[in-house]
Image 1: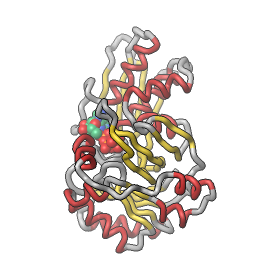
Image 2 (image 1 turned 90 degrees about the vertical axis):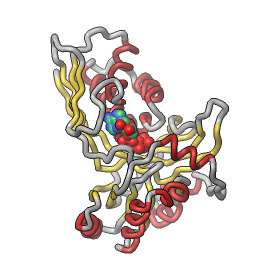
Image 3 (image 1 turned 30 degrees about the vertical axis):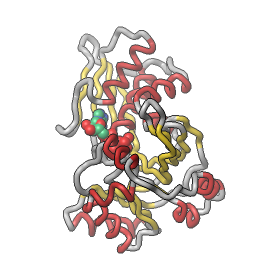
Image 4 (image 1 turned 90 degrees about the horizontal axis):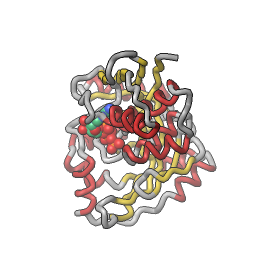
Length: 289
Ligand code: ATP
């Protein structure tokens, strides 16, 4: 095999609570992440005689070592001591950038998986997971999603993963409006805020185990909503529009500003998505996977 193309799914957070801050400045979290069908596609090709290169379908992203997918490739080569780095990576970008959907993390995870396919699966799953942890807190989940696990609990910094029963498949609208959110700024706002203690992730985990979607939707929580949405009125508007179009639940993903609405049917989700698009808002219909 000389080339492979993988789907790199985005994630939403069904539950996200910041539980503390360690002396090293890193925050501890409890989160339940869910893979969705909105995805980038990542193609990795052997290019004998050429040096490593990365290209992307959009201009907004770095195509050098600042791209997380580039970092993932170098980490893969370094970990295995591979000198032959004659590969090209092409990212077809569909996931909104800096939107709280783990776009960069999922590209990085896809590069790890693609390179491992092209190297006859030289790395074990444990080695891949340990590489993914070094790239960022959302990368381990994206790696699991690339391996077919769609729902998982993330503890510690979010990288300590436990697989959960897959959420029942549900139609979604993803809406992305307004300026992106930088993760450090989002955490600084959390540090400066006083929040009611969240109910904890055990309840939502139980609803997944019981496949009780009504209780699941009622238990969803994201501690970033109250601190970010006042600064991102366009995102707050999207959330209220989704609710006014009868989303069963609408919430921000990660540190935002992307919001998602969960609908009863795909037709219903598509109609809501069309309405948002008609208002000039970038929106997509997809499903949980
Ligand atoms: P998360 O939900 O994991 O916090 P996000 O979805 O909010 O991530 P990304 O789309 O991953 O954010 O982008 C965050 C930053 O990472 C951007 O400033 C972007 O320039 C940079 N970046 C580096 N590589 C990539 C990539 N392959 N795709 C998207 N962003 C990337």
